[in-house]
Length: 451
Picture 1 (spheres, rainbow, N blue to C red):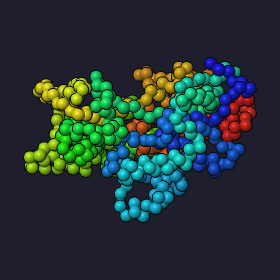
Picture 2 (picture 1 turned 135 degrees about the horizontal axis):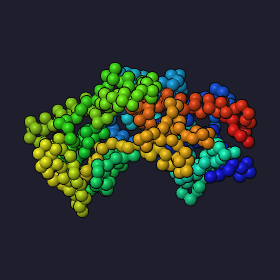
Picture 3 (picture 1 turned 90 degrees about the vertical axis):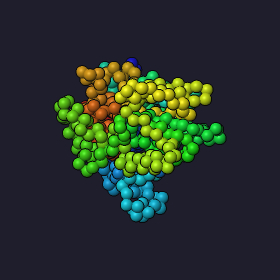
Picture 4 (picture 1 turned 60 degrees about the vertical axis):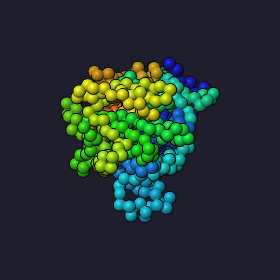
């Protein structure tokens, strides 16, 4: 526990963000737009730390023909500020492609293009971020027995820096999930590794078989990509269903992603929360765009007619083991109907088995002990995405991600990113104002703190 001392205090910010993916980029943009309106005296100061050396978002899945599953209007800013200069449409205009995009008559751009937009937007606010910096410690700083700040320690190579914050926003993203008992190796990949790994197969003996595990969008995209990229190889898709299930992207179902739906979900009883997730899980989890399903089915049927079958579907099955040998990955596939086991020797096994949220409190150290949990051991989060803490904690801890249990299905998705970033910023500003009576301003500006 540190005591605040004006003599040796590190740089102080109103807000520090851990991670600089789309969620915290959206927050940085909201900050930049607010600060340009209110001027220096009322500006909110902020800094972000990002472990990656540059901006990147699911780079391993930027397959050349893959499209977004969310409308371009749900970019980093438009739902919060339709006139923003940071919108996807402004990006297109800057690239000379706005008219061409409009003529394409689609709401769903290529994923590589949307990633380029995210890079473009992140570059506009990169004065707020330190790339290549891993946060290694967060410590509470007390003033008169109350935690007013946290000291955030970040490391870049041999350099270690410490910054002090009145508020902390954690957006550390998702972590790849592997099937039980199977670990990633040079030949056993998670789908997030696909493009980074697949080029390493060039110049070697051409692969003869891939096994792709999973039934969601990423799995189907992997199957289609590998089948196209390696025209001599067999691609075996393994999943526990009879076939891929289509995503429900109808207008009514999509209301689960509306900004107002977050408030509805937050205030709903636990039983209603559970029902909503059951009802609308097929908008996002383990589902595939119907056009891709149809394409894969047509390809499989055509190969069956022509007698050139390279695309195989091992349905109602699961992978029980995958062991890497010097030459192959020996994969055991078990039928869920008969229990019969089949051994497949594959050049590569790709596990498209989804992601898990990062431990929301794992980076917080001693500060995490001041965060409250619910009766199921989950972090308690208020409507403004602020973690519930004890009375001795004035410094705010906010989460962008890991809040599905409190805020619903949009917790880790792009759909509500713009609105969520605005709500967090509003909360930081409003809570700072409430603390003003009887407190003095320091030189950082904007939000009141004790001197």
